[in-house]
Length: 135
Image 1: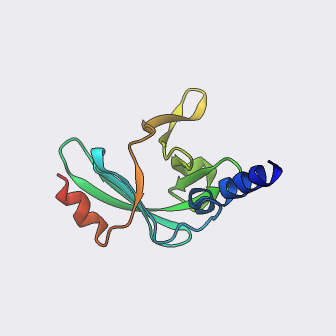
Image 2: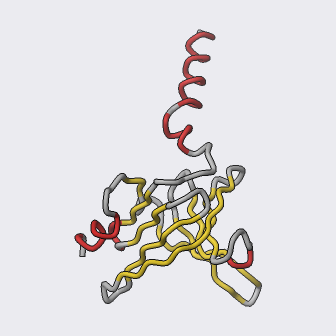
C-alpha cells in the first residue's frame, strides 16, 4: 500500500503539467484566448508580445516585459521591466485566468479579464496570422 501511495505522489508531482509550471522562462510558448482573439507570445525570457483584438476586430500587438512568480503561480506582465507599479496583466498559471491591473481609488487592483477555461497554451507557427484567421 505504501508503495502505491509513493508512486501516486511521485507521478502527481512529476506529471508534465506540474513540470511545465516550475520554470521562469516561457520563451517560445504561446497562450491563446481564441474566443476573444487575444494571445500572449513569449518571445524571450523577459519579453512577451500581447496580441489583442477590440470589439471592431482591430488587432494590435504590443511588446511588454514579464516575470514569473512561482510562489504565487502567476506570470506578471509589465510595461516597464519589473516595475510592479507598471503591471498590466497577470496570468494565473494553474487556471490560465487572465487579470488586468487597474488604478482605483484604493490603489492598484485586479479585475478578471478572461475567466478560467478561455485560454490555453498552444503551438502555432504564425501566431498573428492564426488569430487573424479566426476573425
